[in-house]
Picture 1: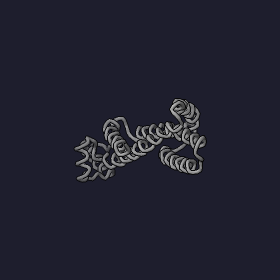
Picture 2: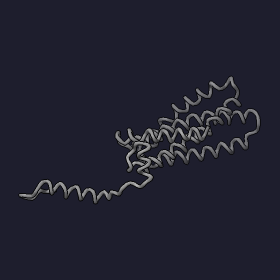
Picture 3: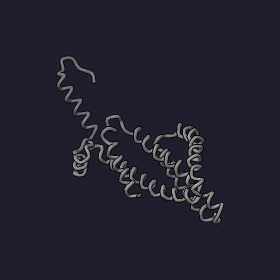
Length: 195
């Protein structure tokens, strides 16, 4: 703002503040925002976003804790002597997929990554449903079980790490200090629901 000759600096500052406040369209926090802010320590302006992000973390962890026991059971179905191969399979698959994943998302808009991963998760779950439905009992069934056990570990790694990477991208360091605890609590709630 250009200063005119002889103008009062305090009144100019007041004008700038008034302009900023009118541009920001600040409204007092709602009762929910005020209560949530007091309970969690986040800013009232953060409450709406933190609520959605905590719910997303809760849903993510609920899904993980619903799939993980199934994966463990299917790993045992393969045979106790072959369960170390599941860890080896996960390691190999992560080493193969990670560069492809990184190259794929490098040019993508950040907002598109998590929805794309969720769609991929849904599609692969549907593929596994059909694979289990058509696989005859015996060796083929064990192969599908092995594939699911390997896939679930790899996919959960990518989903959880991508979720937190997105949270780190969305929030400044100060915001992260305020909101990550609440988001983690929502995620832990998902663990309780899914277990």
